[in-house]
Image (cartoon, one colour):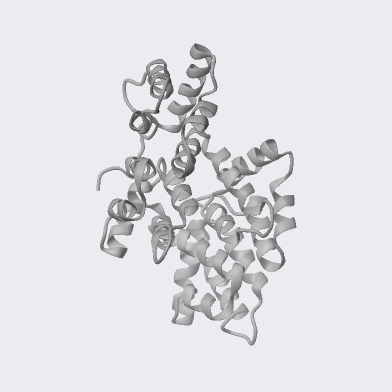
Length: 321
């Protein structure tokens, strides 16, 4: 099944790791006048997150200083965003991004979708627990106060862990679910949105893949084509994100990276978030998909779009062309 692609990261634990040596080298790079940004990139963009956590501890115990505070005081702008993002445990980083998407005026629904749509139940649970710990507020409650309607119900289902565990497959049920989707959309006047978000939020990704195949047999068109005709707004965006993640998560992220750099201006927040959060999961797969889809490498696209230490840090995380 296509969902079983083998995730290949671009950042892996470095061998012969020495947290003490790294901590002292980082202090040296920030001490006195000027900062050796390249040394910071060479160390932090080439260590796994678990190794970076050890460096933070070592920096504190050996030097009596807070590494993240030192980095914040020495770095600035988008370069700082990349490096500080790398220093956070993955679920904390995503929680911070979710909080930012809902904080203040307006809500960034696109970021909520991007973070929550690809997650398994286990990953969602980590995020939910971490969010409450960080912000003393349940994620579900915050989401409910910022969204509404079917979109809110879908996100709530995702974060309460309604999805069946990975590997849960029932071929007969898939035929039935495909028919339910057809009857709720193409097969009637108007659309029963509830059927769409219940099936897409409950069934395992493995099950959904079979449901989508059955749908095509039944309807003659793909689930994407049907949803485009039947749904709109944030609900459509969220459900189509789930469909893409079921069929090929790297495709989903490659498309979003391209969008972040396409046209005038750059969506740096999206660019940083995807590269930082996927670097230890499947950024190599995302790179391969990006090149296939857009006939250029992700590395060359980032080089054209970004500059300075910010560009160098992203390129280090992306790895060779």
